Each structure stands twice: as C-alpha cells, then as structure tokens.
Length: 347
Image (cartoon, rainbow, N blue to C red; front, side):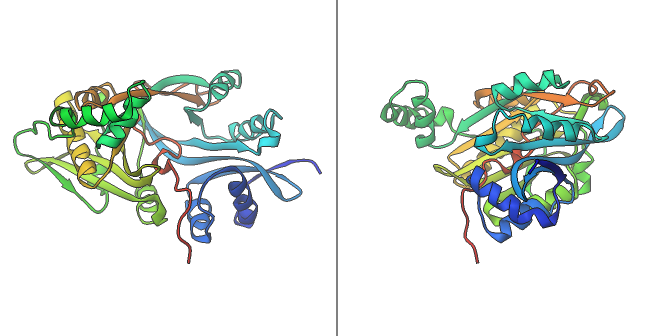
C-alpha cells in the first residue's frame, strides 16, 4: 500500500506509540503518551502511514514569535524521523514539504550534518546560530568533561577539587537592591519583559499554556524552576531552569534568561544565581545556550565551556527571513524536553 501523509490525530496514538518505541528510548506509559502527543493544543505534526503503521514523523510546536513590532505564529519543528529501514528514501523530505505548504513559517534549529546540508536545498535560509555551553558543577562531571579532552578522570577530579573555589558556581555581584526569587509559575508580568534591544529583532514567545504544559504535565520530565529577578520593587528579568535525572544523575538546563534594559553585568548576575541554585539542588552539570551576545558573555563570565553551535534555519515562503537580531535561548523545538527520560514508573 502507498504511504500517506496525514496530520496527527488522537486515533493515531497507538501507531505513534509503536513508532516511538521502535525509534526512541522514551517512556511508553499511557500517561506519557497522552501528555506528549495529545495534550499540547499548540502541537502541529504530520505522520507517514503505511497500512496504518506509522513509519515517519515530523512534529512542531506552533509558537508565537515577536518579529519587530509584529507577532506571527511559527512552526518550531523537531522529531523529524523515519524508521531506520526507510532512511534515504525521501520520506523525510516529503513530510517537511507537506509542512512547508502550510501558511505558517517553519524553523529547524540544529540537526545532523546531513540535515544542515539538505535544508538550504529545500529553500530554508540560515538566520543565525545558538551557541551551546556547559558548566560542570561537581567533580565527577568536571572529570568527564576533561576526559573528552584527553585528561585522565582521576587527574580531572583532583584538579577540580583543588580549583573548586575558583571554578565552582558562585554568586556574582548583584545590582544594588537586587534579589533572585524562586516562583511557582511565570506570570504575565514576566512574560511581558522584552529582552530585544529597543524592541528590534525576533524571538520566540513563551505562553502561559506552554509553560503550564511543561511544568504540570508528565512528572518524568523533572522540575521546571522559574526565577524572578528584581531590583528594589522593579521586576527586571526572569529565567527558567530544568532539573532532571540524566545519565550521570541529577543534571540541569538553563532554558532561557530574559531581562529588560539588559547589560552584561545584569545577565552575569542572573546566570550566576541560576547556576548556584542548580548546584544547590544537586545538579552535577548545567547546560545552556543563547544567540544573544549579552547572554553569551554572561555565560563565559560564569566559566561555562563552549559546547558547539546550532544553526537556525527558516522557511517562510515569500517571507525571506525575520528581523534581526535573532534572540534565542535553549528553548527551540523540544529542547525544553531534551533529554527525555528513557523510562518512567507506570500505574
């Protein structure tokens, strides 16, 4: 039977569950599958079906983007996969071409080298890139990072122990009257903060619905911890941490950090507060990413190590791009979910 390309619908859940089990190391429980595939109303996905069997997927979160003085919906894509036996069959191209026919622009960030070479041939343009960073917070993770650079683990652990007073996460100078406040959720007062210089450029917008889905959904994703930053009575910024169980135990990701009228010093303080909290909650490793030069400088000031780059590719039909600068954190596609748990308890 010929392969058909169809939008994801609730009746496809069993087929998607079988595809996920064959393709990914992710939970298989009904609770996870409902949360991941049925609950987000902002999800936009296509499946390739053959005899009712799912053989390939392409998923996107349809998110609002600030683009200069306008706001437009963009499909922030991920999970662009097909079964191993169908790779190089052109099926993935067919799925992406189907999504490209829809009215909303499509963004693909990162991807394999093959993906990065394919996208320009499909009409995607490179907008910018996200710079990735990592910060070891405990000796074992520091030794692991150094081992990848050829330094024996035992020597790396000893070196981190000696250098800990200089290398460990620590608070940087706060503005006069500055305070960092852990909060239960991100309110409209924080979502209204625009980190773009003079409101120029483009950025994905967090929405209350998306944040609720992340923070109160499937427990296996870990704990999403928002932080507010205030100077006196003024709210000047916010950040979002994720604490989760990784391959080596507790790990953390700084998914985004945003401030109004930001400076390098303000972001340096905000990043340091996030790192101190991650370390205090037991994380051995903290990852981060940004395309914003001020945030990149703040990460480097806080001793984060460079961990590669992820190009941002854009397709918008007649719209050839987005207003610059492009302001991203580590919050594109499904990055707020990565890494997924490989398993989880079921009822």
